[in-house]
Length: 325
Length: 280
Image (cartoon, rainbow over all chains, first blue to last red; front, top):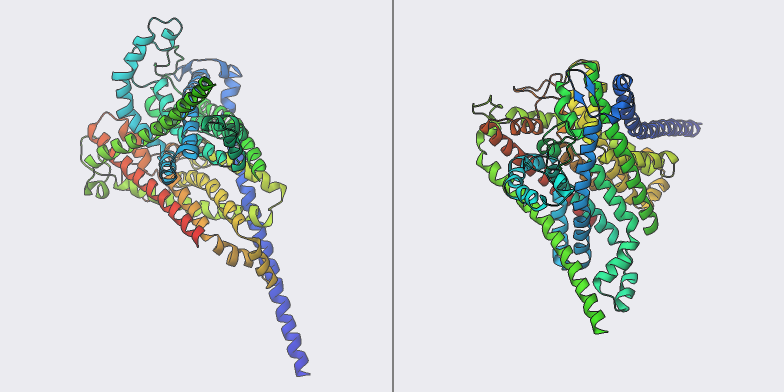
């Protein structure tokens, strides 16, 4: 009889602790599920808050907001064209330099570099990516821009002064700060992104493919051009898009050196502005609902553009991962 | 025949030479930026920087309130962002590994990971600063937390996926319930990797300026009240560097050096932790 009660008690205890486990487990599972949903809701929250915030600007200006250049806080006439133009042009300059250099660095590290130097150089290049953007900004303002103004820009203006079309793009005076300088600094910032992703995808090329191409008598360049690059095309493109995403949204470095002028100049040496620089400079000083709303609307435009670019980047990189598995 | 060979070899030499040039180009900027930073930053470095408040123009002072403000907001942001990030990563790697939601969250998280940080600032301004009616350190910390979360989610998921399934099976065979298995076995196995993620997140937010500009704003004075505008090192650097006063500019360089040293040592530390975790 005593034994039976003991067994019943043990059974009782076991079933309560099992129940406790089940409750705890369900709780923990739902907690992680909620956290995952929270990550999703951040993105939707960002979209929603930007859309709500930009309603006053879009109701006031309609779609003209996207196509007009005027930016006048006094008369409350705002148009996004100059910042959008600046964002696109600085990013184009940056990508024009960073794509070949970044891929070149990746080729150097994966195919040419002596093995003992490979790690240190890769880490050094990645340190470039780790430097906060405000450091690029302060360096650009005090060191790089004055150097460009005194030495490089006069030479460029002189060199192209007689060439039609180009003499408009590189027209003086040399301010030092401006769209061109901002593009160059963005290029330096984007290079490590492109090179580290390109390096990763280059390394996924099967050695057998490369070795058989070498065995056919190809030079190193021919192996890179005909085997490595075609094999890793999607991944490299993904890396480039990721770099573009950074260039488009980069704020502090650009704010320091672009000059913050709300006009579209033919010359890339002239001061301009970008979406992010405009927001960074003017948001805390913006008075009136329309002004604030116009800045938030700029933010919405930037977010939509970068969202598309980054989504494309992730799609490319995901395709590459599928291929390597 | 030999002409073709010569041409191919020349082409090889030219392109490979260009890629060596590209690597030299990249390293050149790293050396140049770090060089000028150390040169200009060391010039203003003194004990005062760490013990005095930010000065008015022309006065002498340091960066103490900015450094403390940055530290407080960083700690708070990590305290908010890390649990959320680790839990979301846990869902993706453990409970919902093959769920559709996981694919969507991974995609969205990767986009948040590289979304422009100034957008995060606008978002937090809209949902925190506007309802509260004023700028605050809390809003700044929340903005930084939004940046911490995707970094931690990504590394946690990656690291949990690296834990061998045999460990899960062994724990399950002993009758361990799922939460027990995750908290006592999986988290321990992936500890080094998760810590790396947190360190990387700290490195990422310690230099962030844009999301703080209109959330935490700035403050000239000593302030640990998170309900009031709070100074931070990056925002002070931004303000001081763009000012016309030379002593402010010197302090900005020194602050820039402090941030860079902090960020670079954090990322090197993160690297060391991963290497140790892999070797174990």
